[in-house]
Image (cartoon, rainbow, N blue to C red):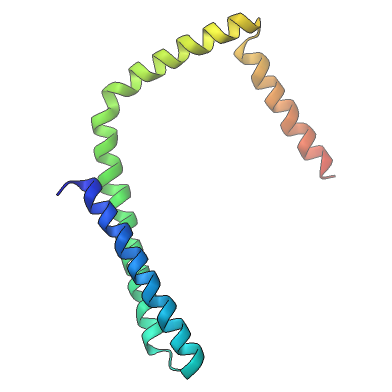
Length: 112
């Protein structure tokens, strides 16, 4: 089973734990017994913590390693498209960066 399939299984498990937590929360509200709810909450936290670790330290690293050679090509293609479109508009990247800075400044001043 591949890494994406494993992540999808983890997502399904998250939903299952969430449903159990919902049931145990309802039980807690009706009975006042918090043991099952606390256990389900801890299970959910542990599961999500492990899942995020897998994504950050395994899945994303694998994707980055496999796509690294593509990244340069995509960047170059986007740069060519950007230059072409800017030329058609008679504008520069700097023009739009200045617009963004001016908008940011205006937004900041509106709060005062």
